Length: 218
Image (cartoon, rainbow, N blue to C red):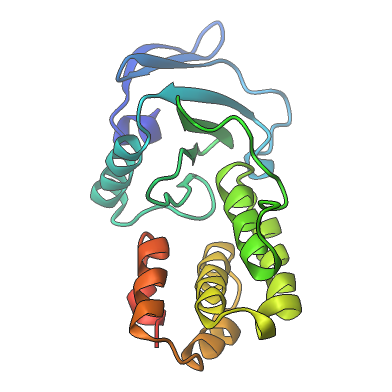
C-alpha cells in the first residue's frame, strides 16, 4: 500500500481480518489485492498481473517516474519494485510492485500485430534491435534482450552501419546497468566508434530516454 500511495494511488478499502484485502484507485481505474498464495516468492515475479488500457501511456509513466524521484530519490529501474524504461512513442510500459505483481499500461490504439524476433522487413543487426524492443516493451524480459543483442553484435556488428553499432552498444550498456552486469566492454567499444554528427543525432533521437546516454557517447 505504501508503494502505490507513493505513486499517487488512493487506498479506498483496506482490511486485515478475516483476510487481507486492499483496493486502490487512480485516474478512473482500480487495483484490488487479496491474500498472497502460500509460499509466494516475490523475486520470481509470478504473483499476478493485469493490463490497464489508457488513451496515452506517456503521461502515466512520467507521473510515476516523477513520484519515484520525489519519494525514493531515484527512478526504480531494477529489482523490486521497479518501472521499465519508456521509449518516446512506445505504446506500453510495466510497473512491478514489491510483491512481484506486474501492472502493464497499454495504449488503446497499440498495433495488434507484434513480430517477435524482430520485423521481417529488417535484416542483421537492425532486426535484432527491433527484437530487443519487443523483448523489453512487450515481454518485459531484459535478460533475454541482453543475451540476444550480445549475440547479434558478435554476428552482425562488423558489417552493420556504424550508427546501428552505436545504438546496439548503448542498448547493451543500459541493459547491463539494469541487470547489474559489467558495462566496461560495451562502453569501450562505443568509445572506439567514429560517429558523425548525423549518427549522434539519430542515436539521441532513438535513445534519448536512456539515463546517462550523453556520458556514454564518444
